[in-house]
Amino acid sequence: MTNGLLRQSRFTTFDGTLSLVTDHQRPDRYSHLESLEYDRPRIARGGGYAYSASSFGADSLVQEMTCFNRFLKFDPETLVLTVEAGVRLIDIMTWAIPRHMHLPVLPGYPLVTVGGCVAADVHGKNPFKDGTFADWVKGLTLYHPQKGYQVCSAMKSPELFGMTCGGFGMTGIITEVTLQLAKLPAPALAVTGASLHSLQEASRTLLSCEADIAYSWHDACPGPGFGKGIMYTGHWAQQEKGAADSLSFTPMTAKSRATLPFSVWNGITARMANKALLLQNDIAGASRATDILKASFPFATNPYFHKLFGKRGLRETQFLVSEANIERCLDGLKQLINATGAPTMMISLKRFRGAQQSLSMTGTGILVALDCFRNARTESFMEALDAQILEFDAQPNLSKDSRLPGSIAKQTLPGLVKFEQTLHRYDKDRLMRSELSDRLGLQ
Image 1 (spheres, rainbow, N blue to C red):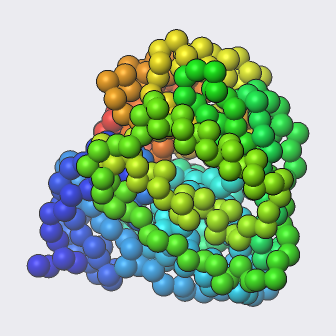
Image 2: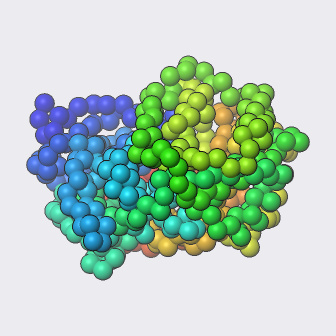
Image 3: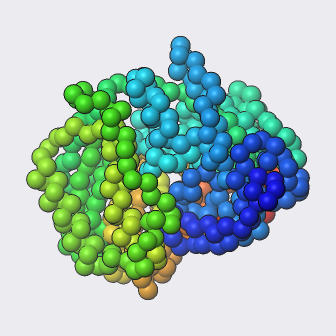
């Protein structure tokens, strides 16, 4: 095998709903990136934790960047760190936390790569306070087969930089990223879990919350328990045991998530699990010291939620609603779920602030995440939810939805039309392609 071990591989979205076999290269040197035909369609791939197929497509070569995992440069005065795109978040945490530094924006899983974080412009547990990942990127280097290596930042080539942050790999292969780290305020977080009676109570609480971490979890099963939940807030705190001693977890991939041949989750088991979580929170008490890994990545230290969806997988959607529309949106969501007997399991809310103009969400409001197990009603419910997204002028998160139609995306994402126009000027041959870009009609 040549050109960085070309082979055929199967790729699956992390939600388990889309899987296909396509050409695959796992380069471990820059000459491998450069060795392919200059006009061959391709797309970069990191850890593979997106719910959408943004890192593979039927007619594109997948260039998996996980071997590009070196730390390149660090300035101890400014706390600016340059790494290759395949460096994982857990690698940065393991290096930075003992040195009393951290990266404020951490998405849902510690094995996500830095390049993937840039491409999806991910957010953490308090995006209103910390912003999105792009806010902590000082600059980056891209490789495009027809343009070579390009360095860009908010000051140098700002248009290309803006398109790349939240552009899902469509501007080229991210090879290096320069990040702004922050001083670590304390080695742990004091997390409080307060009981909630409704989604509306959570949204009102979030709008006035000034915690370092702030998000809610709710029972989304149709019926009388709908909306009951927990508001998780966290503040940096001291603890005797150093946080660097507790950065361990059992890795989960799209394949290991789908080990079970069937889904354990259904209407009955989902209700039981939600009631058990509410009871567990009441027993645990108001506040507890939590290490940084568990506070940042709750699903990493408790993987059973995802694994119990089995091989069939789950459906998730996430969308941003303005503060003006959030109350009506949550009312409409409750009515829709109860009226249809939807296969919904949990809802989470966060307050959000985003400033990008690419394919990522922008503006301020409340971010709503909704998980469904899959049965005969799932797809019809998701279509009805699309109509509500339009009704309440919400913005979907493309990385969290593996089936969002391009027609809905074009009506809801404020930066998409301009992104498409600029992309076609920048890359007339449209070499960087994925299932997501094809679904959005960016051909």
